[in-house]
Image (tube, rainbow, N blue to C red; front, top):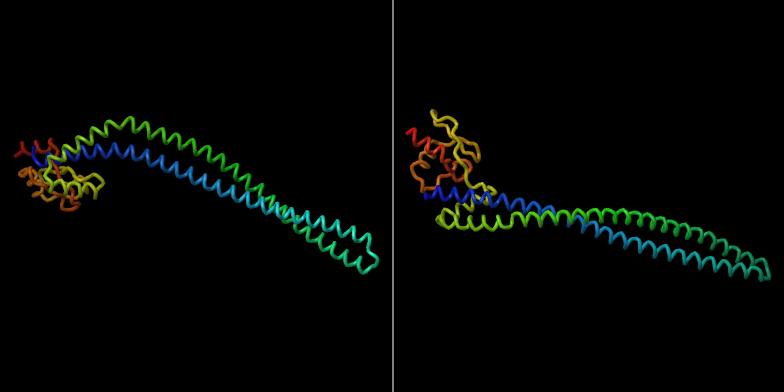
Length: 251
């Protein structure tokens, strides 16, 4: 076979292989995204749980303060019953009233904390529901990946072997050029020549759709063991067999 024929065979196998891999890679990518979303939700749930605990501690601390104040008020009231003069009684009364005022503020703070705890718990319940649903989506995506691997596994192995075998038929320098272009154009290292008007010698590159000089076509026809590239996009050009035969017959 000629270099152009060997390159075309390699190109077609490479594109087939990339197509199969893209299906598997797509399934894996979707699975990874679903898993990442699940981990994100779980992290949010963990942080929310920590907030609940912290708020409960604050509420408990404030509630303890309220209880201590209530106990102190009770003690002061007992003392008021045994005082011997108005001055002592007034001092105790002022302290009682101050404690009652402070206790009201503390109880209001405790209520705020408990309300926040209830809100956080509600958010946690909603997150738990989202986590359950997301876990189901992860399961579906994992099943999709396994099914894809089962379906494409052998095909990928066979095509990889065929692609590697085809690559050995291409000279190292030409193979390096092919691989460089395949990387640059996401697999589309080659492009066929499209005939627009044979009478006026109008031909385009199927890769970039830019018109080609007639000499490129002539080189492809006359020198099958030479790499000919599109002057616009740089892809390796090839002629479909039907067009090659037709052109050869017309000459």
